[in-house]
Image (cartoon, rainbow, N blue to C red):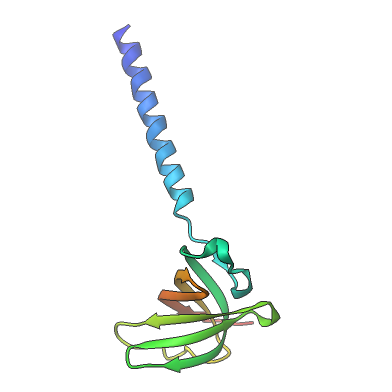
Length: 118
């Protein structure tokens, strides 16, 4: 009987641990959106925004971008880089900016330029 209780307890602990990991993963997922899909529901959350660079304003150690998805919307992205700005970060390129969306702007911690565009 002791072995049965131990097995039941081990199974319950395993199920609880798996449920905790699953819930944590689902809650921490980062939505992948276009500039036109950003809304108040995403304010304060981490996002991944893909769009076409409409403008680039460089600074000493940062850059400000305007990302567009055509007529649907645009969003401002501020990106502070530690070494240097990506050389291919220019108007017309498709990029993905990952960061915090707040008050209509993305404070990006990473900006990736798509290598191949159609």
